[in-house]
Amino acid sequence: MVITPLMLIWIITLYGNGTSTVSLNTTLTGEFVTLQLPVQPQSYALVLVNGTPTAYMINGTSIVVPVLAPQACP
Image (tube, rainbow, N blue to C red; front, side, top):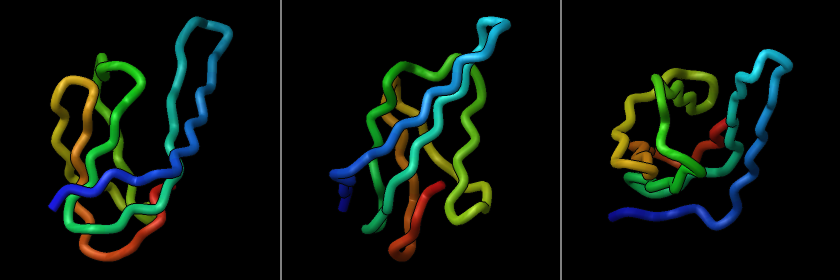
């Protein structure tokens, strides 16, 4: 079962040297959660669930995160 969360809080940080970071804060429930990213990642994406690095799959601009129980994704 794939569940997409309804409330997403995106934080985009732009730095003076032209680089940026994008952070997402949401609550994940279900077995797998598919998140639509604003753009296709150009490098490695770090996914933390409750502060722990978590495996994920990227398909274009979507990312699939396995979730075993309700968790906040900082």
